[in-house]
Image 1 (spheres, rainbow, N blue to C red):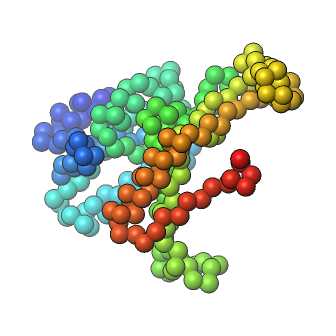
Image 2: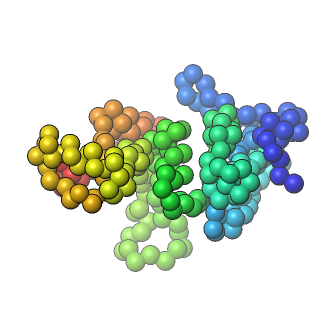
Length: 236
C-alpha cells in the first residue's frame, strides 16, 4: 500500500538518506536515496511502470546489489484532485524541495477558468529554468538521415519565461481589457477588443543564467562548443 508521507517512507528504510546539495552545488547521493515520483495522468501509469523498470534495471546492472532507489509516490494532477481536492498539493511541492530530485509522468492540464498548467506551475514554483535535452543516435535504430551517428548534442531551453511565464488573461476579462486599453492609450497599439492576452517576458537575467548553465555543462563534459540559437529575425 502506498505510503501517505515521505517521512514515513524514510523512517521505514532505516539508514536510507535524502539526496543533499553542498554549498558548491554538488549532489551528495546515498546508496539508497529516496526519490519522489508523480505517476501522471492518462498513459502516465503505463509510462511510469516502464520507466521504473528501466531505471531499476540500469542501477542493478551498474551497481549490483550495492545501490538502489527507494521510490515514493507523491500526488499531482487528476489523482491528486480525486484524493485531496487539489491539482498540485503543497505537500508534493515540499517533498520535491526536501528530496531535491523527483520524476514525473505526463500531467493533464484541466480545462476551466482559473486552472493553469500544472507543468508550468511546477517550473515557476521550483524555478526549473533549464530544460536539458540530450540528443544522441542509438546504434541500430532506423533513421532517414544519411549520417545519424553524427547526431550528438545537448539542447538547453529556457523554461520559465516567454510563453512559459504563464502570464495570461481570458478574452473580454477585466484584466485583458485593461491591458488592451493600456496598449492603445499609452503605446499606440491597436488590439482587437475580444482578444485574449498573454505576456512573453524575456529577461537578460534569465537568458544569461541559461547560457552560463550550458557553458558549464560543456566544460564539465569536455564538449567542444556551445551554440546560441535565437529568433531575433522575427521576435525583435
